[in-house]
Image (cartoon, rainbow, N blue to C red; front, side):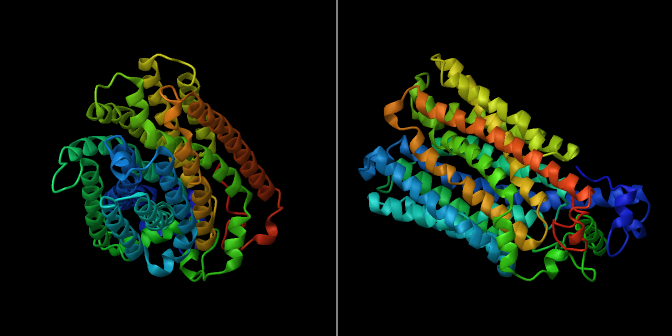
Length: 487
């Protein structure tokens, strides 16, 4: 946790020095108090929303193995088309959603998106054919697409750059836990049907959609729009938290945060789209998400085909354990990343864990060893995500530049859903050698993209120290020579 404020940082704070809040010890105490309040009031709600998001993306994987395809009379290929349509609309909605987030206000926009896709998920439980399946999945992608980039952007208005990886790691862990929780929940909900004329897989979608809707409504009453509107902070805490955020800004305007004073400019959007960091980072994230989405959608199928689970219910239980282990490691890695103030460098050590897992599972026939490799696959990939997810946000200054880079990265990365959709066809079972080998190659590619981005960020920092960015002195964005890139 980046609660330690150095003396030289305090002297550079603009427009007001933080030393009016007392000495360093008092400031650190106040910082810890603010962070604790933010962590306990905001993060649990975001984690809950993200858990709902991941449940609603992966519950079709659970529904598939207990009758979805048979009851809708669709083939494996048609099922894959439905997933692909979801990812297409999901990707297309991310950047527009992030650009309207500030005007619509996070307190309204994030809960609204969640409630809408909860309703759409319930509708998925009533579809009767392939056309209905595709149409509802398309609408679900539109509603869900804005959540994750919106949450990353939202958190950057409450936490400093060095605080973010741990916080994103904590709520992203909900994705890992949703895999575990989703398996258990699906196992229980499947037992409801057939009842009321509905099969068990339909009850999975209907009840999980209803839970999502309730969580969206609840979040509206809890999430604040900004530090200033956070009712759980005292006046002193709001002022200190606000000025503490300014330490990350190269310059502020008349006592306001740059992001608050900034008006929308297409030039900032263009600057974000053309940033080389976006393409290095997004390419790597694309490869990682190809693996993660494949893992989430087809882990139940993989375990089923390994042959040591007796029935679908036991498959759901076996799928819980790899996610639970990955969740613990993800939080530990995110904490280390914040302490070291390193993102890409940490990923250079976490990605090889997943690479080893895929290399082994693609070439070993033993079911027990293959199941063991799913732990490495989940751990290496999930532990890398908080670092890469926060990296661009850390290295982008200016609200609309940050909104663009965060959304662009996720839009490109989520194209990995197309790879995941078609990567594990049933005909390749039970070993799925081809699918595992494809993800292995993509993860190796991701490692090299991360390395290139680390070297590129290091070059920018050297150029700033050597005066090559002096013409941008006084700018309210990441071009300012005082704004150093996090590696």
